[in-house]
Length: 97
Image (tube, rainbow, N blue to C red; front, side, top):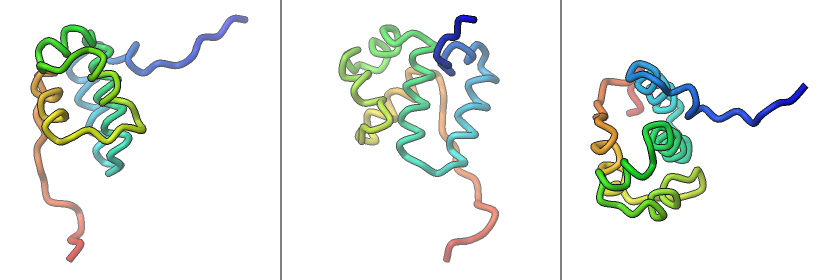
């Protein structure tokens, strides 16, 4: 039996797949996961195309969208826009304050 490493980007085929994946990641409230998830989505869509649309070089995009990276919000916003996505805010189930 031959196995291959799991790569979530292979399964992000539709807008619904991408939205569901990103929603699940956002619920974890983990910036590193969000960064890595955006990298997965960009890979699924085509990193070169997303780099062009976001105005970030392909190499810089790969570096910025690693789980151990800490990209600026400006970079995240450019990538989200290039992916044709938007982030929205909703009240949490319970207030922190």
